[in-house]
Length: 393
Image (cartoon, rainbow, N blue to C red):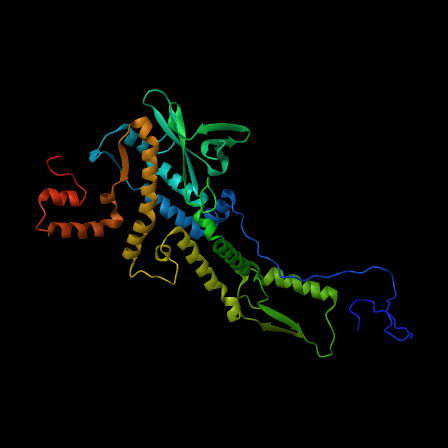
């Protein structure tokens, strides 16, 4: 048998006859393939819209981290000595005329969590008057020099472009805070992007639930017409019956209304199969993945299942230690290095852990252990818990 078609005729005239089709020339080819899922785009606007503005888990996670971190008070040190009054502390208390310190840092942490980047501009207003302003991440582009090092920020709003040099010098400057990105040298990686599949799954489950309430999203039952004479409904009867069902019995407000049937009509109820009901667990699983990407214990968000902490207090301490404090600490170090020029070398910002209510139990336990240490002097005990010796106070 030859492998090429049409097969050639044999010499004696015997062979396979090529079959031809009659009719008008033409035809079609049908392809069938599994459809691919559609995912949310990976830019700041899409993540903010589909995540923070539409998804309750993302919204609460970002707000919980940002509000908790922005409420932690700042401390300022010069060497080992704490400074209680300083222009830098005043600037962080009210960065500009529109925002107080807590509001400013809440927005800064929100930018970091949703975009992986946060941009701060320092404006010198003359003398000791300074202001800090946040730049929206989707309006900023990092500019590099000939060797590829970032040197400036290009801020665009409409047709207006402004360029700000990175660093802080005379006349101001800019700071770029970013989360670690393994494949990008200049921009950060947002935590929500790692949970993008979970975000779309959770949003799709919510849309499915809404459609289920509005339109049942599946046949809740079948209306069977079985007359004795074996006839069928006319087009007019079918359209009228369909209109009555949609107007009188569909929607959440009409759920449970009794159905009045005429002769020959029978209602066959349908129920969700276990496979159909599995979307509920899929939604909970997506919620846990989103919370995991932000570092928020699911227990704090009211997500059922996989509560690995013994109680709420333990989960709250883990939230502070593993998520909030590392974020505040890296921000304090970046601000210290950036503002050292305008405010003087040797200044160091840090957070006041003693005024964090969520860590009060840890603080009480530390004080008890230090107080029970009879081999330490009073000044050594004060230094062990973060206070200055009495001779330096």
